[in-house]
Amino acid sequence: MKARQKRLIFVGVAVVGVGIAASLALSALNSNIAYFFSPSQVHAGEHPTDAVFRVGGLVVEDTLKRQQDGLTVRFDVTDNARTVPVSYTGILPDLFGEGQGVVAKGRIGEDGVFYADQVLAKHDESYMPPEVEDTLQTAHAKGAVETAVQSMPAAGNTVTQ
Image (cartoon, rainbow, N blue to C red; front, side):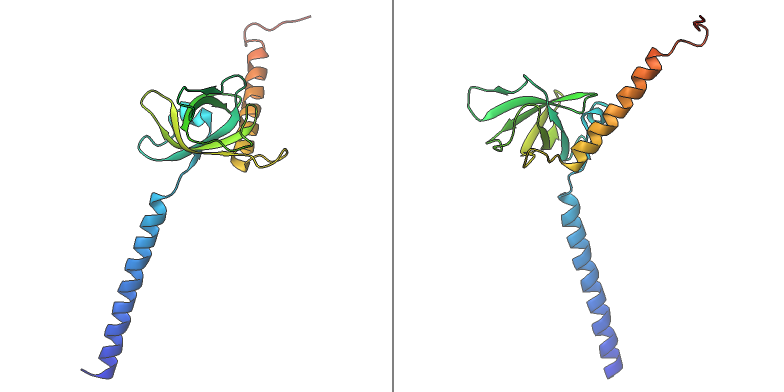
């Protein structure tokens, strides 16, 4: 075998090895992806049913309930348009509270409750996760448009003065 052939075989094996390593790395990264969905998107069924995803918004006032085991907590998360019930077993972050921004990572159950494996709360008084802020602004704008459309008179029922 000539030196040129040996180099070509070495380059070919190296290219195949890099390709295998890249595909393994992408496969590992793909299994760890958790997309963000708003409560409105969860109600619309846009979330994955068999994968982990994140849901975020504001914790609804007077919905925080602790179970008797002391670690399980139930609360509702809203984007000011829709609400998703969340159940979490574990220790909540210190800054977690009603009326505060939160992002929960987990799966949706058959009963429509989001079972969180992880709960993240904002880290200071003025911070809100970008996904939550965008969701709240979108829901607020959508609600304002729907309210304006509902308050407009129907096409055949115009009011004249």
